[in-house]
Length: 271
Ligand SMILES: [Zn+2]
Image 1 (cartoon, rainbow, N blue to C red):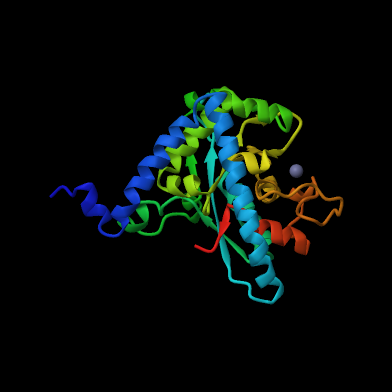
Image 2 (cartoon, rainbow, N blue to C red):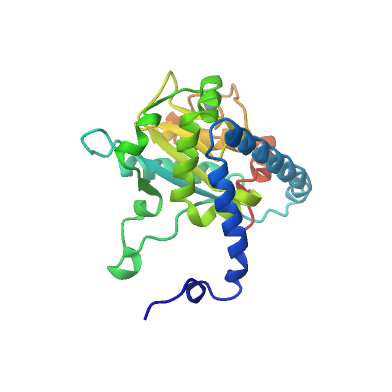
């Protein structure tokens, strides 16, 4: 027998439906180049400021030794080449996940996959752990993202057609997490493993976006880019997570100020 949508959701999840519809509507609005993208920036800045103010209170608790584990959700979107071959190796992606998990554990943050568990998990037994962490984008829909920039170039691209595609892929691949992006509570971070970033191995626009880019063959920069996404800037200490070449290190350090900023980010929440 076919189950209705309400049958799947039940009560009280059904109460979330208005949030889901509003989130989808806004996610589509945010796809519009210039006006929609600029609105998304303003939306994210307001949410980030709100979370940082709450984070000040939480930081007081941290200093008193009350340090509950918080969660950050993450999902990779992998690209194909024109022949249809996968550009990034899922094993390298899992090393990047593991490095990021080790680094963020210092801040009492557990990194979890943003996607629901793969279907095969229940139908045919255990699937490879990497399948929890990524989706593969069709080649045709990723051509506008084949070569992206960083810093000012990335900001300008985010306001234009590439930004529309980043937003569209985030919306369609992370559909269930729309209400989190809408409220900013535990907004997941999308990692686009793009074919090429001019002059950089990875890039993040910090507060402005819900995604970071990493070059398809330097996925180990992911932890560093997540730091930027949480609002951190660069550091000169070569062992620190925010040193520009920290991707080469297996273990990185964080200062207590960096921990405070990470825990206050809209991407990092208790539930
Ligand atoms: Zn950086």
